Image 1 (cartoon, one colour):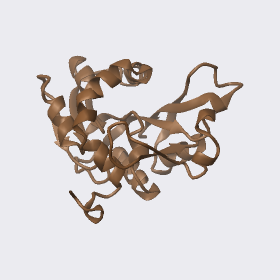
Image 2 (cartoon, helix red, strand yellow):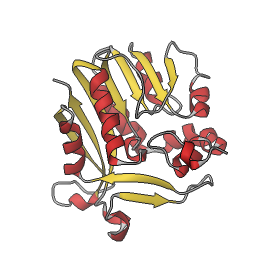
Image 3 (cartoon, one colour):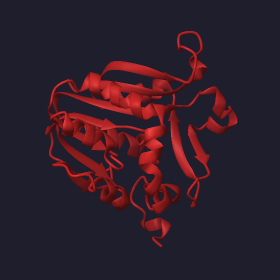
Length: 232
């Protein structure tokens, strides 16, 4: 077993166990198919990636976003740290480029993509605020001027989480697949927008994600955000 001190930057034991769980990978596509968010974020990306172009999916999992946009004429690159996830992604024939790499320091050419995405709270799985900023800054770097980035994060003040659990923003939860608890950072809206604009992005759209009520009168029912930003 890889000792903790040898884990990649931004990766703790819980995330490492999650990425290396065969049971998780085997059930991942079914989990995505059953999730309303998986349909909502595809629709959101279709709105903000309207024309074919070069697209990089940062934290691609088994490739659902890359496969979808490849069929729509995009030239896609899928990046993930999990070898097992990428092996599953490659089982679907495509011309997609798959890259096993850490999002904190993934080495892709500067100003080489029209679109980038990081969905399903991938950014929140990165430990340490400075390293989350490095992921966002790297997305900015690899986009062309005028390029667009779509990111999904969980909301810190979602009422079902309970106040004590989210005072730091880091919520630890037991894994359904065994292993150490998985920690996901939950953002305030101000925090994620400040992170994005702090590296140079301009905000295009913020979509609050609701279980039931509309966000205008009950913001505590927002459980996450899909955000589209542009590189000037």
